[in-house]
Image (cartoon, rainbow, N blue to C red):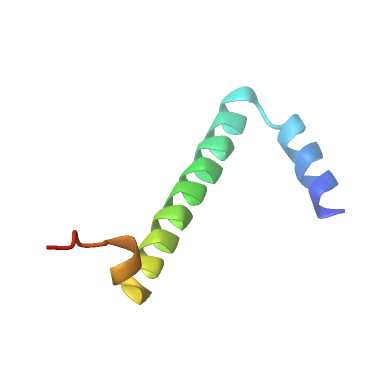
Length: 54
């Protein structure tokens, strides 16, 4: 139901507003991905940043 309301709301907005919403969603996805990578790196630094064996 919420998805359908979001679609209707997006379609009723003007073109520049749709671009602004898409930009905000894209930024949120990128920053969420960066945060997830940083958390994984903090929890398991030896797995993400493998050091070469001597």
